[in-house]
Image 1 (spheres, protein in one colour):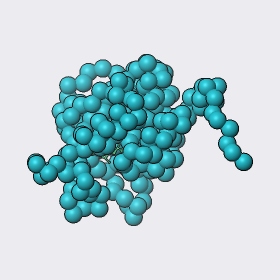
Image 2 (image 1 turned 180 degrees about the horizontal axis):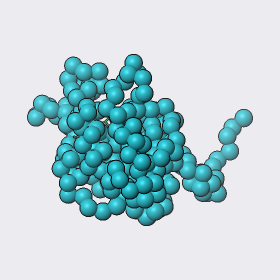
Image 3 (image 1 turned 180 degrees about the vertical axis):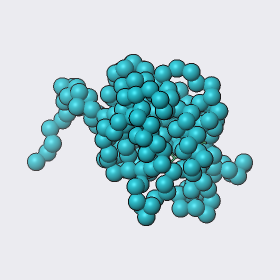
Length: 229
Ligand SMILES: C[S@@+](CC[C@H](N)C(=O)[O-])C[C@H]1O[C@@H](n2cnc3c(N)ncnc32)[C@H](O)[C@@H]1O
């Protein structure tokens, strides 16, 4: 049986339930990146809730903008903005010879990865350019300049201990009370993946400043419920 066309009322219901509308989901699925749909839906739900604080949503690890679409759509709904940080030269595992390398993302003139053009195309295609501020640079340097609360921090940058720890220490303190910290690629079992994101997730919980809200595959959502980080 043919599916009935979705109405404005359906879309309002989607938003109230923390689901992105069909256009946003289609843009997410079309974008280059690694995040599966179920994690994307969990990220969107967290972002939609956090955006209602009116505070900005902050992402570390833009890549080609797949997850940024979700933060931007949530920010648009709430009249706030998504901020996304990346040097756009790729993480260790995205370099030539590594598992997640995409040769189509190498700048032929410079000979290095450059995901910025793909990211800009992604946002343009999704119609979300006006809802995103992109910071091009290293996460710790951007964090050192930042001095205001945010509704959500999404950590999906470098996956070494050095990078994940710097992302946590640089950005988690800016999550407002009641706001959300989301960490991607959390693998409790080392057989499933690298342990650096798992270690910052554990550190956040053990600090007493965060309480777990949800777990979807490797995506963990924590709420800021205490002071010290
Ligand atoms: C796993 S990808 C992000 C994927 C993206 N969130 C998505 O869902 O499509 C990690 C990104 O983090 C960036 N990155 C790694 N270390 C970084 C650092 N120290 N500062 C800024 N960006 C960094 C890489 O350039 C890469 O684009």
